Length: 281
Ligand SMILES: C[S@@+](CC[C@H](N)C(=O)[O-])C[C@H]1O[C@@H](n2cnc3c(N)ncnc32)[C@H](O)[C@@H]1O
Image (cartoon, rainbow, N blue to C red; front, side, top):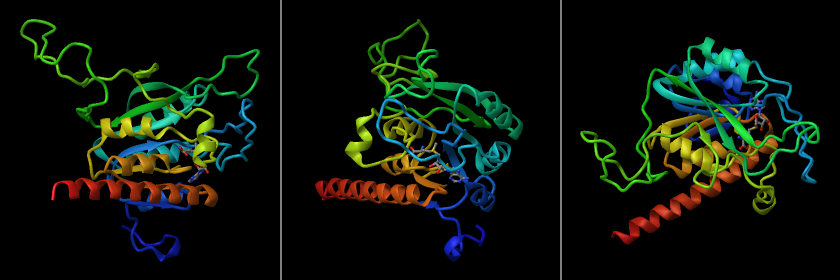
């Protein structure tokens, strides 16, 4: 990998978030070097939540980023036969869709995932509150979903739906695009979570939800890229699931928040590993 990063870094290494503009980081990543993209770019919302007293300052890139270039770079750095997820919103969806398609992605679906709290932006007496995240699901080539233990089938393992069909499995191998209800994790946390956990970022995502996507779309040891790490949720989901992470966060305060969070999770995961190993000695 190439020279030229802050701090005289010789290589861009997975297992790091770079405190820089992701549009400067991405050109330094070789073609096909990442195995999954899970990214939550700013799309111009000047965030204000009317239901909490917390007032967040405007996010960097809130007026929008060069999405066309971001889409092309995302396609280039993603390995063949891999999955990419891009958070979006109903009004930016058509533009994001067009850019991703033009970059070469096969756009397979738009996931709609229930939020942990109903969004309070704008005139809620004259419009509908936003209670879902939209995520554009893309493939570069074709990759099948992993077999996971996330959702159990209702029918008993081994039962046959039709004569001649394979016996049913205990866990689902197919997933719906719409994740609502108690079976699924929410895309965001409820409002008290930030206070309880000391993570003050206006658009923090639920790590359990990201973990599901990580488990469905990548293998242990693979590199997951997020160019807009914010409080580091994608990296935390990667570490918790034995994957590597790579990405950028332009805002130093959020970058430091992400670093702190990741170090804590790495310590916990390390401790758990040691405990498991000592049990088998
Ligand atoms: C929507 S938030 C991501 C939140 C994240 N998913 C989380 O759970 O915390 C987008 C983040 O991208 C950062 N950002 C904006 N423009 C950027 C750029 N050009 N390069 C890197 N980061 C950028 C913002 O500071 C913000 O923290």
